[in-house]
Image 1 (cartoon, one colour):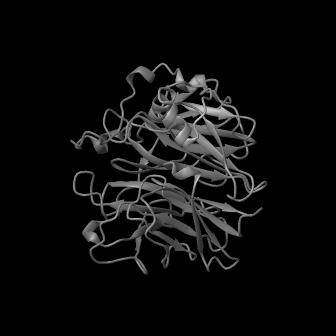
Image 2: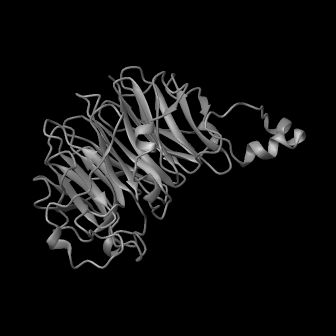
Image 3: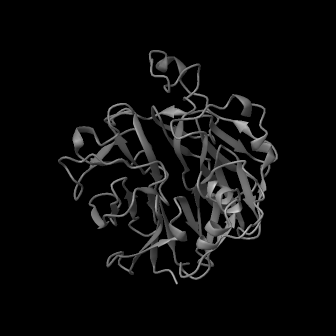
Length: 385
């Protein structure tokens, strides 16, 4: 069974589990799980201990793996077919060698990857590439499309980001199962308040005139934040406070995404991927700026820092203790930062160079708890209920 805190680390070569003890130390690594599939995201249910891991690619097709025993065994819900299925279907010897058997894929070749997962109120959600939202109400065994979003009137005009047209952020309201937000790169933020039947696009800037000078193609313009949202989280408490790391800045919304305030001032760059919000304090947020989208996508000055605000983005502070301060060229991707709910809160991130860093004092100091993993695509936390 999972330890007190288990990090679910999705990589290009499978899922890894990093277990810590009651003091969030003594970390141990197991893996790779999920037959070495690329795993873009993983989530867990603290009540049951179930873990779900989503991923795939052109070769495997898309699917969601699930484990009910802390990662010792896994079952795959294969959602689309890939090149391996085409090869095996036409080559019996190859099929026998890899143990392939023809199985139905409910979505054919509609999408190539599961990019994100979310679990709320007993429903498991999956975001895909190209962008669609799926829902499972039986723990990941069967799936259906959320057509209210997939068939949104604006869908024909959604433009892909550099990683493709991906639905990467699934943000639920734990107190209201009818409310949800998703982030799509590069189509922006969408919200529903009726359980997914209809969706509203929410990208409006609170102060459009202040951004009239930007000439970057992903910058805020036409009164909107810019549709290339990289990651998004809801803050705890009432009021629907949201934060997003965009391709061109960090933004805060106090009204569920209906309007967004730019809170980038004080950060060393406008570019980055992940964002993390404190589990109890809606004003405490962490992000990890990179030097720029066309400048290498590594920490400014090749010195790593997680930046923290305690006042909702009015002020930012660089947290560097324990992080490499010379010749640091890693990238931290959009889903590769996570947090636990302990006091003080733990914060964790993984790098494309295969390291995982942890802070158990809300970012004041950091330690490397794993290294030499494959490229880290996602980090989430499963805590024992």
